[in-house]
Length: 437
Image (tube, rainbow, N blue to C red; front, side, top):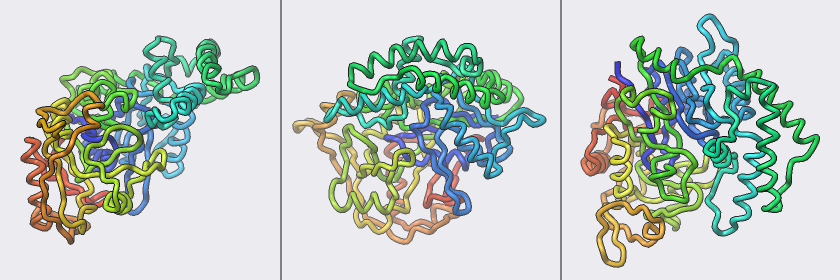
């Protein structure tokens, strides 16, 4: 039995949720291995849209085990709201049931506390024009506390006696930061209310808390297929993205091992999801960005507004320089190209094939954002296409120009094309290769 990792190859929002939903038909276990509720994975089934921030996208298939791994940071209030929404729709049984809950929350995962969110927003406001573009969900400060070894883990959250100690210690540090930023500090009644609320949330989550890595390893040993679901995208990775305009966790395929609690030999194939064009939310370099009417038309037709924040996404042409970098650092074996239909009717289509800086051709994607802000993309132009069907049974159903475009991208990146998406709904994708085979 084969496993697979699904990651984003751009700046997030590539359509990973709908791809994971489709692949979950073949998987038995679906694992979120990093990040928090700054992710927004959108799945459309029979016209009903579901946006998931923490629960793996495989939850829409009722017989799958869904795991939130130890590499994640969890806002208990957001997670409980998501679980209750899924329960109300008959998609998640909050009771243990005969086989235990099918949502497993890693006991090692760290908890996003209310003061993390307050610190996050205060810092971003203080940066002014130097802001990063954070979602304000407290993701960064929670990972900071994790690295500083003062974080609250889920196994602490479910023990009422431990919550007060951790929270009071954490608030002392948070208040010092908030005071320096002229933010609102925590005092008396508000602090006690936070502790009481967290204790209540911990008890509600307790039936789902378990050793995530052990559960995944047991499933694999029993011949089950495991699908590891990434969030954000390769170019937002903390170490390898466009630093400092990155997220606070590692988004690469290799981190699926660390963030799930299993060895790297379990990971299997690596599927990179990319749009047929490029988008980015928030601040940071974006070499192929379209800031004109065509960029706005692409935003409107593609519905390019953040699932988590509602912010309009920046739009631009496909960037093969960045994608080749993403393929290399993730060890990509398969491609899933989404939103091909959005390009229909746009006339000529451009693809960035190289970067120039001060008249010099760069050999690789630059790590320094100062250099990246200066690059001039070298474009190759392709004829546009119309009439992309809502569903396709083979690549032959696509216009010839669309097939040539896909073929060029695949050949340039040097890995096999396994999935093509022509719409947002389940079934609006063509699967050319079984990634979990």
